[in-house]
Amino acid sequence: MLLEISALLIAVAFVILTFYLIRTLQAVKNSLDEVTNTLVQMKIEVREIGDEVKEVVEKANEMAVDLRTKLTMLDHLFSSANDVGQIVHELTSSIKESATSLIASMTSFKNSKKIAQPPGRWHSVFEGVIAAVDLWQKVKSSRSNAPGTR
Image 1 (cartoon, rainbow, N blue to C red):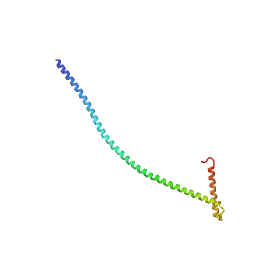
Image 2: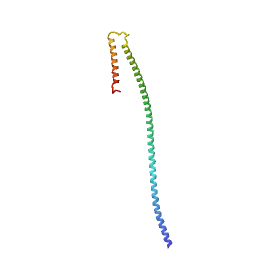
Image 3: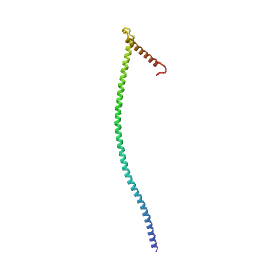
Image 4: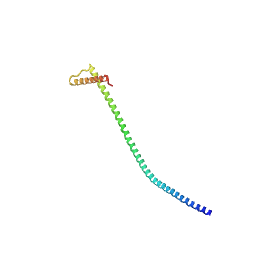
C-alpha cells in the first residue's frame, strides 16, 4: 500500500508539474510571438525610415549643389564689384590730379606778371574762378585748423 500511495503522489506531482510547465511554456510562447510581431513592425518602420533618409540626403545634395552654384555666382559678382571699385578709385585719383594741376596752373597764372591779361568778359570769368578757388582753399584750411575737427 505504501508503494501505491507513493506512486499516486508521484503521479499527482507529475500532473501538477506538467500543468505549471505547460502554463510557463505558453507564457514564453506568447512573449516570443510579441517579440516576433515587434521585430516585423520594426523592419517595416526601418525600411520606411531608410527611404525617408534617402530622400532627405538626395534633397540635401541638391541643395548643396544649388548653394555651390549660387556661391560661385556671388564670387563673380564680388569680383566684378572689386574691379568697379578699383576703376572708380583710379578715376577719382586722375580727376584729383587733374584738378590739382589746374589749380596750380591757375594760381601760377594769377601770380605771373609776364602774361598779358586779356580784356573783356573772359578775363572777368577767369578772375572769378581764381578767386573762388582761393576762397575754397582758405575755407578748407580754416576747417582743418579749427579746434574740435578731426
